[in-house]
Length: 168
Image 1 (cartoon, rainbow, N blue to C red):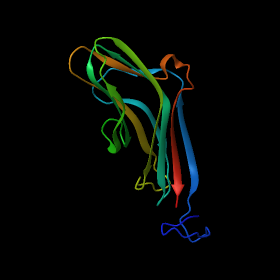
Image 2 (image 1 turned 135 degrees about the horizontal axis):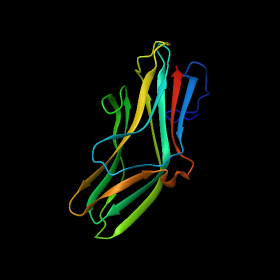
Image 3 (image 1 turned 90 degrees about the vertical axis):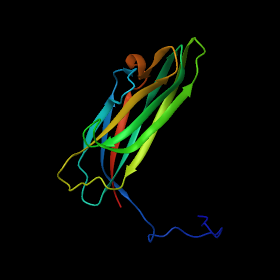
Image 4 (image 1 turned 90 degrees about the horizontal axis):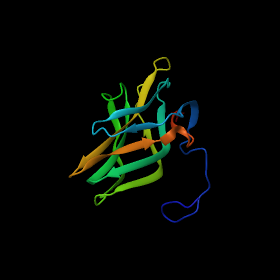
C-alpha cells in the first residue's frame, strides 16, 4: 500500500484489524411517511455488544420527497443510541435534499444511505443496546409542507438498518 509519505509498504499484522462478532438486520417492507417537523421513529433495533466492542450502524432505504408550494424544504435523518427520540444523538441532522418548488408539486426520489461507528456503546456482553433511525421534515416559508416517504408503496426492497458489533 502507499503510505502517507508516498513510500510503498507491505501490509502486516501489526496494524489495526477488526472482526464482526454479531450482525443484526432490521428490515421493514412497509412504507413509512412523515410530514412532521419533529423527529419521528423510522426503525429501531437492539444488539448486545461485548465489552470493548464498537457498533457500526448502517441505514438505507429508497426515499421519495414530495414538495408542495413552498420553499426551504429539508429532510433530516439522525441515529440515536438509547430510547428513541430521547437517546444520545450520534449522527445528527443528515440532510437529504432541499430546495424551492415555485408553487408547483415536485417529487424527488433517491436511495438514502447513512452510517456511523459508535466507539463507546457501553456493551457488557449481556445488556442489549438500542439504536434508532429517526427522521423529520423541515419546512420554512409559505405554502404547504412536504412529505417524506421511505419505501413508498412498500415495493422498493424495504428500509433497512444494520447493527454490526465490531471487536477491535
